[in-house]
Image 1 (cartoon, rainbow, N blue to C red):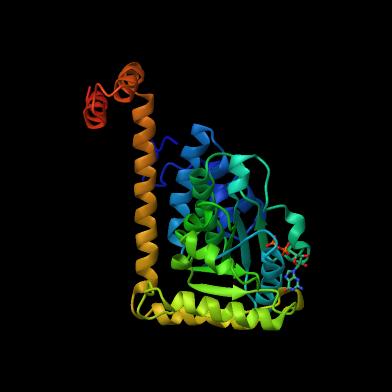
Image 2 (cartoon, protein in one colour):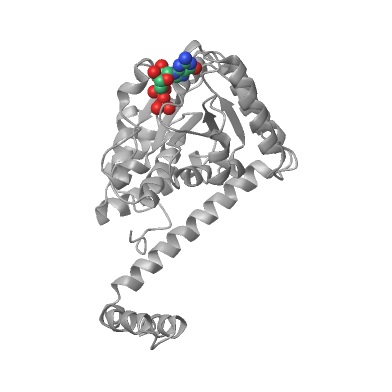
Length: 336
Ligand code: GDP
């Protein structure tokens, strides 16, 4: 993505984009959907406009709580989010559900994201459900979701749920954009080991064993295993030890406990400044990821790099040039 011409102020908004901004601020769903479509567009002029719109809306973002929910297909994510969402709306909240679906970027197919999964929630005016952007790399999909999240906040949604599937890198990516990252687990002994292997335990702020109704005894065993696994780790914050809850999304059980835990998390980390510090850290790390990928793209497209890369690649393969010498020579072309 080429951000080099992205503006830093919103003063150049066209009248049409100003209308879009006003519509989003007024909480109009049509404007919100249009703005998200604009940020998801890969056209360079759309991207530039999208950054202007986002810049104009930025002062109105940040008030929501951002919750990541991950779990393998079938863990009960959509059932859980629907039960939670309906309950939150009953409490007077407005909820947006966004998805980061790694499968959509790899195969064009999608594990998450078809709207029919949350039928009840879809029909509620106070809910906004957006499937995963389908184009681009996981980084691209995540970038769009992160920006869509900001748009939803500007539109007045006070809870943002970012859903992802427990495969590949997507969990780390989502953990890097939300305030609290929750793992939805099945009561199958051994699943926790998978999570440990993948390094997922470290990024979980909260674990929920769903489908507790099926086998309460197995649920208790798995819960104890998770508690042990989490206990062995040094917590990311001295003020928060990730709890392990149980739930039965199908029977709408464990939902209020879950939300009380989210509120506790915010209350525990706000006075210490950690809540805000995490967001600042996420923004800066996002900026650096974009810089890294921008530089990489600039490098790949540089004519002299393109000209010399094949020969130098062969030379490194053949052992005639050291990797470092080749890298320095290629990077040197960027200066000219
Ligand atoms: P997702 O792929 O993670 O979104 O999972 P779904 O929400 O689609 O759930 C997969 C299946 O598990 C569906 O048939 C649900 O009805 C069922 N399910 C979800 N939560 C529970 C639960 O708490 N208890 C039971 N018994 N079934 C559940």
